[in-house]
Structures are given as structure tokens and as C-alpha cells.
Image (cartoon, rainbow, N blue to C red; front, side, top):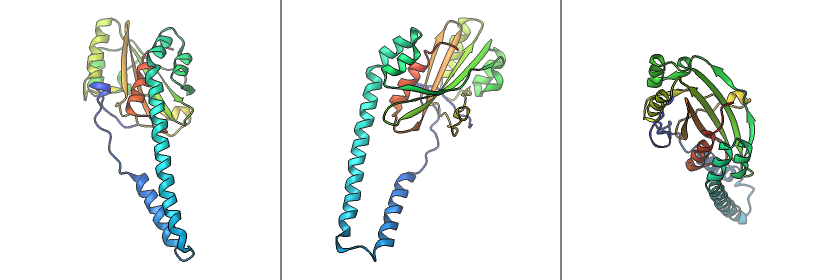
Length: 238
């Protein structure tokens, strides 16, 4: 998994490398190939087929947009209730309130040495001020529209609260490094790079909980993923 830097509003990572719009290229290429290879066998009315493809694509895009907006509204509308549920120790109820369900979850991965699981200035901080313990999990949440996100949560424990506050200030600042999140490969899935764009940290006593999320299928927006991390950062330590 590649290193990435987080900090600032919403995690404030360095922008992830941008990839070209490969999906559009593939669709255009496929349509062009179909027209070229079938030109000898097409009837004069075949132009209607091309128009139908375009029309169906537009309708499909509109339906996808409506579904995405409905998903976003559902997550945001029930965020407060979900956070209340998770604070009360009812995590599954919290996800259900937002129209989500937890599909897979790794076991707890404990560690005593935080340094080997960190990088950047965060690692330097942990060398000077060792953590007391570290627990990490990774899991998947999904909705009924085929959208799914992988969520990584880390609980970093220190000896006192003042160290937690100092550590969070460093974690939240742009370009300072991070505790490495667990990969989705632990769930038997292809590994996902956590960019740090969708991040929340929650101090609780002598522990800082760090949650990060990435889309693995469907069309979760940045706000959707941020909402998911807000709830995940409140999860009790396993």
C-alpha cells in the first residue's frame, strides 16, 4: 500500500494521482467498433439503434444521479441518530439507520509498537513519544443500491490525554504522515489505497480513534464517505 499524507479539513490529503476518464474511452471505442464492424449488415434504419444507445445512456445516467442523491440524503439525514446509536454501543443499529449494513470485518490487529506502522512526521512523533498500544480493524459497509465502502479504523492509545491532543493536532495537519490503515486485502478483496481524503479522528480519554474510508463499488460521494468516517470514528475499541 502506498504512503499517503493526511491533514486539514476532511483529512486534507495530498491529491491522489488523477487517472484519465478511461470509462468514457472504453464506451466510445466499443460503440465505434460496433458501428464499423456491423456497417455492412445494418439496415437503413440502424441509425435509430445509435440514437437508442445514446438515449438509454442518458436515462441510465439520470437514474444513477437520482439514486446517488437519494443515498447521500439518507446518510446525512440519519447521521445524528447514527452517531447517537454508536455512542450507546449499538454499531449495527447505527449503520442501519443510514441505510447501510456491515458485510465483512477483519479481526482486531493489535500492536505495541506504533512506530513500525506509521510514516512521516507522525512516525517521528511516535519515536519521541511512544504509544501505549495500537489496535486496527478494516470492514465493508454497503447499501441496497450496490454502493460499498471499505473503512479502516485505528485506536492509538497514549499514557495521558495531553499527548492525545498533541498527536491529533499533528495527524490533522496537512503533510504530516499517518498511522498506516489496514488494507482491504485482509477481507479477501483487491487492496484499496486509502487516500486520506475521507478521514475523521475522535479523541476519547487516552485514545485517539482514526477512521478512513474509500469507495470500492458504486458512487459514494466525498460527503458520503466523510459521513461514514464520522460514525466509524466513534466505534468502541474492540
